[in-house]
Image: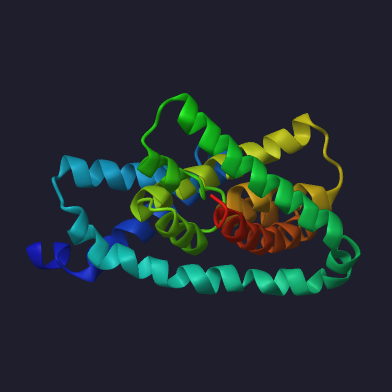
Length: 225
């Protein structure tokens, strides 16, 4: 048993096994709150805490999953390519929407942290929460933040976005698929984009391009912070 716990297969098996179970649970119940990524994360934390398993032991295999982050994001290029005509037609509104989202996200995070008198290091770690993880970590490092806190903020932001975005689209009666996709991708990066793909091909493609544009804009804006 100890050999299994200390091998990369433990973290990998635990993560994939719980995610498959939570995905099945979500498909059966159709409840937005039972987001597979959210519930999987909670269960992993609970298991590691209850059984007093060191995080380093879990990361032996858990870190292997991060290898697939970049390829998974790159795959979004295919859906974007299929909507290239629509992208060209709406590129300026998409770019402006992403710019507005980046400025709003970063400024609101900064102001809220100041309002609640949160430490400057934590503030720097939280500012890039709305972009994809690799970019967020680099921006956090540049701003003298703590990358691990940034990763947690990015995950929470993505999960909340994937849960609330479909609801907000209905509440505000957003009929334009391009606008819906850009809003999801610019605010909740890859996790939200997985939900956008479920909503439709156009929403998924626009959400995918919003990830890239918002990431670039966030890097450029962070230079002036």
